[in-house]
Length: 87
Image 1: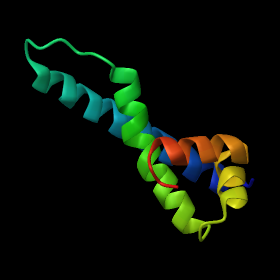
Image 2: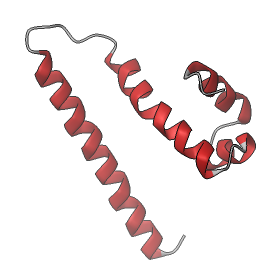
Image 3: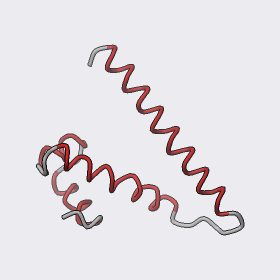
Image 4: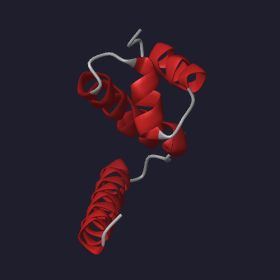
């Protein structure tokens, strides 16, 4: 990866991280006196489903290619697609 791509990637990662942090803080702020629960699963589900949808569109439904792009194996991808009713 050349320096330009590395710089762009760091900016993207930072932006995504900041967006998640801001959104999570906003969510917690809206809870008020209500207790937060299952936050980990909530965040993963909220991020994972759109990522799966976009990656499947990006790869034109090719599960092997989507799994490779995501850095997971195809069986894991299929499990995640089923979990989110995308298969």
